[in-house]
Length: 196
Image (cartoon, rainbow, N blue to C red; front, top):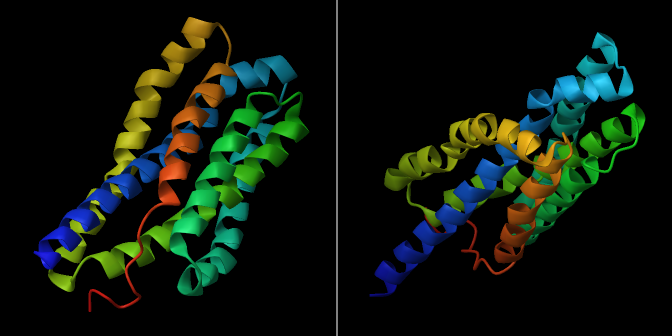
């Protein structure tokens, strides 16, 4: 009975992790889809457009190292919850950007928030699922990537059209992320090495 409850709880947590991963990639994709309206509004060069994605990637990669170390020793639910709240909140702030430099700096902040997520989520999955179920759990978790991208490519253009503004998707995308961040704080973490 106890094992059955633990297994059910693990799958529920995995569903939350999957959703957060989906929004991670959804939020990350918004600038790539609406880059032309941004270019026209601020008269940006190709170099400036390239810097938006490059700065995000560099910050994401560098921030992932200390945040991964924190996930090794700290409360993973808090790391994921705060990370999700930060990247979702800054995604909304991206919709308020007033020029290229403000947009770039805010995107770098989004990169730091998103960098917190993968190390903590992967660590948690390792403790939630025994070795013979872990690959399946990781597969479900990683489905968030293509589904998040597909969802972004199929909906962001419609949001821009409906609200007649490239800023609208940033505000809309932030809402589910902030709500989901609250759920992260209530995850009951297993002990490290519990599934071994």
